[in-house]
Image (cartoon, one colour):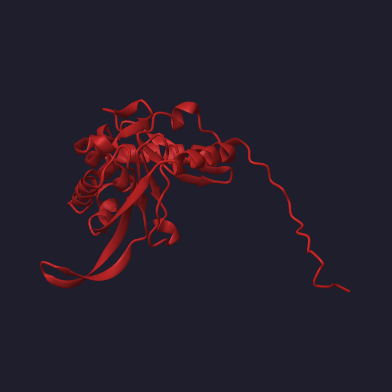
Length: 225
C-alpha cells in the first residue's frame, strides 16, 4: 500500500542528441545569448495568393523568398553576420529556409536569391527541401546563408517569434493567412492578412532598421506580381 512518503519513479526512454539535433541544440544556446527583440507587421496577402497565375510552379514561400531578397538589397544591414570582431554585411543575398525533418530542423539555402526568377527560386527551393527530407543535403546546400525565413503558416500558427540563426542578425517568422475585416481605400472589406514577425539581434540591428525593412517587405508583397 502506497503512503504519502512514497516517491513515484518515472520510466522513460533516453534518445541521445546527435547529428542535426545536436548541432541545432548548440545553435539554440548561442542564439539565446543574443539580445533579441521582435517586430510584427500585418501584410495583405491578396497579390501573393495570385502566385499560381504568375508562376504555376511557385508557392507563397517562393514569393516570400523573392520579396525578402529584394527588401534586403534595400536594407543590407539585416543581410549580415555578427561576431565579436564586428558586423559583416554581404553583397550576396542567400536566403535560408527552415525545414522540419525527421532528423530535426535544417536550414537549406537559396543562394543568390535576388538574381533568380520566381520559377528559378521555386526549382531551387523544391530541390533543397527534398534533399533535406531525404537526408541528402551537402555542405554547400546549408552554407553561406545571410538571412533566414521560418514559415509555419501552413500549420495554422497565428503568430510566433523565431530564434535567430546565428551568426545571422535577423530571421523572419511567417504566420498563417487569415481572412480579416479591414478598412481599405474602398471601405471595409474582407482581406487575407498574415503577420510577419522579425527577430533581430540588437547588437547589429536597431528598431528603426528593422521597422524600415519590414515596411519595405510589406510594400513588395502587397504589390502586383
